[in-house]
Length: 156
Image (cartoon, rainbow, N blue to C red; front, top):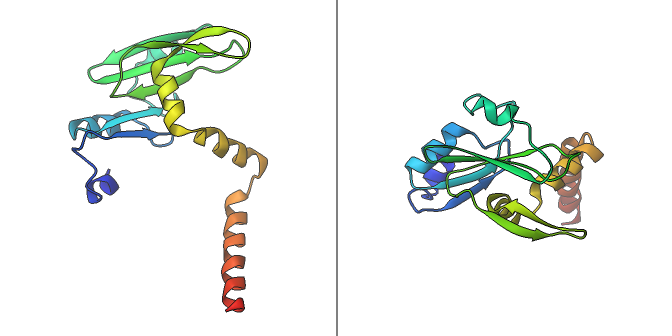
């Protein structure tokens, strides 16, 4: 929030998309009070202020459930029977659904999930795969960056 304030991005009706590390209800409320919208996935283990029944609600494949409290909307969507449900929180959306065509079938998906995927561009999935494939990738990247700095200094 401080960064957005310093960059003068608040009170301009912008829409911020975040992953589950940053998304929480107090932030959504603060941003909404400053005319800035938030949409992001939310981690059910870290969200103590969310409606408990949202996380305990059993949901079937290709089903979606909507919960609203004031300006905050929570969408729970399960794409397939063997997958975990996805929880998306927003302050700029309605409980709308859209038709989606996959390789095998035609289905319905919450418009909010479709919009989130469109603007995040697979960032969550690429981060997740890097963490699982290379356990110490951050130290490795730091070593590569330091080697590059050393090499570039020697070349000049």
